[in-house]
Each structure stands twice: as structure tokens, then as C-alpha cells.
Image 1 (spheres, rainbow, N blue to C red):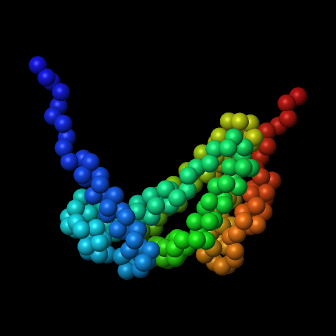
Image 2 (image 1 turned 90 degrees about the horizontal axis):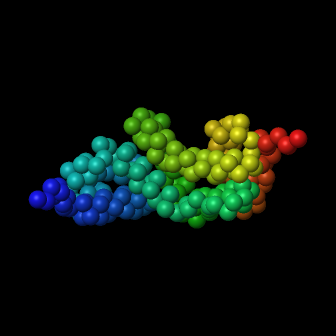
Image 3 (image 1 turned 180 degrees about the horizontal axis):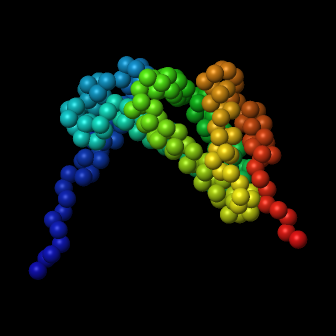
Amino acid sequence: MNNRPPARRGRPRSQATRQTILRATNALLEAHGYTALTIEGVAEQAGVSKSTIYRWWASKAELAMEAYAASAAARLPLPDTGDLAADLLAFGEQFCQLLRTTSTPKIMSGLAAAAFDDQALAQAFRHGFISTRRTAMQHILERASERGEIAASTNIEQALDHFYGPIFYRLLFRGAPIDTLFVQQHVQAMLTLLERPAPSS
């Protein structure tokens, strides 16, 4: 007797539809920004109903941040060279290149501005984009700790602030360049701040 549960149908199609919605959301964000984004517009762009969108996302904020975070993650592979300095340089250059060569700054500044008056968006922004980028850098630092390049007592949360803070400050407030020279200088500053393991006696 076959006791296996019946095969669940429709999942590949559902996932394909979900990805279509995320791509449509990204296209509209890049073209018009967050403020002009609407569920109706996404539904039309993706060729789905609004109820299909609300099946997965409770709000425009949730949808926008998942689409934005997924797009950024796909463009930022996590380096693993076996060396902390090389990993920081590679990741920093990839991240800053994304900010230099795409509409990401426009989208990010629009989302950040809108988040001041939209608590749902603010929460989605922190737990979507900001959290995923911090997690990526956290992996780099934790691997360095396991290799003995930084002390096990290193304050990882503070190190993450040190890495991202200057980048966002220059981008969003100063309008200063985030070019290769900046990345190199920034990484060197990061390396001097990180706690090194005590020499073995």
C-alpha cells in the first residue's frame, strides 16, 4: 500500500510567479522610486492580481524590501579568499561598485526617507536590506575569527557599524566619492580597529 502523501502541485509555478512579482517590483523601484510604487502597479507589471501579491506580502513595504534585498544579495556574492584583508577589499569594492553604477542610491535614499514616516517600512528596511548586509559582513568577520586573524573577543556588532557607517554617511549625506581609493583606505582603517589575538607565549 502506498502511504506517501499526494504530490503537491503548483509549487514551481507559484515560485515562478513570486519571482516575477519581485522582478516587477524592482523594475518599478528603479524607474520611479518607492513613493510612486503601488500594489496595483506591480500587479499590472507582473501580470497578476493584487490578491496574488497579498498572498505573500502584507504591505507594499514588505514587498519592496524583499525585492530590494534579494536584488542586492544577488549582485553581492560573499567572498571567501581565506584572508580577512582580501575579503574586506573584495566585498567593499563590490558593495561600493553597486552603489556607484546602479540606481541603488536613489532607491535606498527614497526608502530611507519614506521610512521616517512609515513604521512598517522602517521595520522592513532594518530587517530586510540592513540586516542581510550586516549578516554578510558578519560571516566574513566570524570566519576571520575562526582562522585566528582577529580576537575571539572582538565586538562584531561594533565592527559592522564601523564598516557600513562611513559608506552610508558618504553616500547619503556628504555626496563624497566611494571609489576604489576610498575602499582601500576604509579597509585599512577597519583593520587597525579590529582586535587582534594576543601573541602566544
